[in-house]
Amino acid sequence: MTQSKPMAFLVATRFNLLTLMVCLVAGFGLNHATAHTGATGIVKQRMDLMDQISKDMKHLKAMIRGLKSYDPLKVRQISLANNQAAEKIPDQFPEGSLQHPTEARPEIWQKWDKFSAYNRELVLESQRLSEIAETAQLPAIQNQFRELSKTCLGCHKSFRKKKKKS
Image (cartoon, rainbow, N blue to C red; front, side):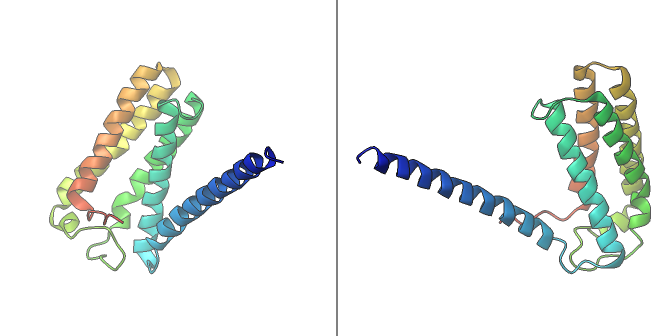
């Protein structure tokens, strides 16, 4: 009988850990979904577009870092999808579209040339990544991914509201 208590404890502990993990994942999804709550029209469209780019970038990052199996064809496909999405970005920012819950700052329209330059760079860097993915070795792909990420970060620092820490 003394062996059943430790076994029951292990089963209960595993169940509790699994339950905790499911709750955390579900909570993350809920929190992420609520970030777009109330978004409508062009604000929702651009938030959805940016969200897709973000998911793609995270997928690329995981492959490039070896956290997911590396597939150069997938890197190319995702890079091309990001390139096509990047080409749509300027149209997603009609002047004054600052309705809640947008993360866009008014500086976008005040410094449209700078915003547009970041966008052109994003289009170029994502195109380069898709081309490099066809022929290059992983280190070259990693370097190009870093350049692409710097472009995203630069634009976000300049033109996106800081995210509130939970």
